[in-house]
Length: 437
Image (cartoon, rainbow, N blue to C red):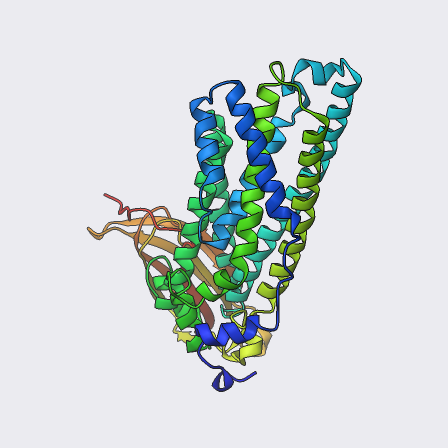
């Protein structure tokens, strides 16, 4: 595919693409089952007043789902995890745990079946989200330099994701609820979306990274820049496929609300046979239809026209960034200064010497210094002589770093140095730059 053949990714353009992927309607019974569970929940609320937490859950179940499809996917994941917590055998009413009566045993069997189905659906959703995130990042990476810098950018992204996971772990360690954890997970997801939009406008965290992008079609950058806009091109996807997802979100909330109220009030009102059957049928509908939806939307997403790799776009010039070459006379040095705007950037290098006359093996001294704003020098990488080397380190200060190739010890031999160096910024929101005092 040549970039000249690409057209702007507008709402009309995406509408024509989505016409190729019609979504089958949900079964008629889905909405009716959600309404049935809501009615049963209302009956249980009459048995005992709702607690403040139950009132919040009831309000969410009766409210309007969030407009963003991505947010709804996270909301479904959150609700499945909340339900699985309710189904923990040690938290079930004692009569159900002990299967005190045949009716209790039947209910325990249904709850076990519900737990299996939702646990399987939750795992599939987690894998779906991981795969989509990798697809986006890997597509961007096809436009990045295919050398040590691309490797470091991947490492930076892995560092960013580890930091995000550490934030989540901290919430859990502090006793945060499932709701607290998912509020943070959604915030982190929105941060990723904001960063992706910044890529299209070469701003924010991608202000320096964007210089690596070679051959990215302008129509793709324009689309990425608008990815979070309320009336942007992605709004077409929401209009086309959102209603089905909203219905499933309402259903899983109805399932959780009923299950919570029925288990908490089990000592006051036993679950009727018809009611547990309605719950089981709702879970079957939900898990089957949600599974179908994720498979469908995954296919729509991976084949979407905004997933254009560098190869598809004909952007082969990303491999054309040649090494520099310089001659260092005997008794002289060669220096390169790299400017770093954010801590946790990587200073990286790759160099070698051309073979000398008569196959003489040559080497060159090499070291790295940090230069503070006041001009004070700090040795970062000690002096050593190399025939060739590739390496990197993570910066702890913003500022200037000087790479020095030293041929001062040589009396007769000049050295032909072939090298590539760079300062690779972090693929995270940069912290306030720190300069050494």
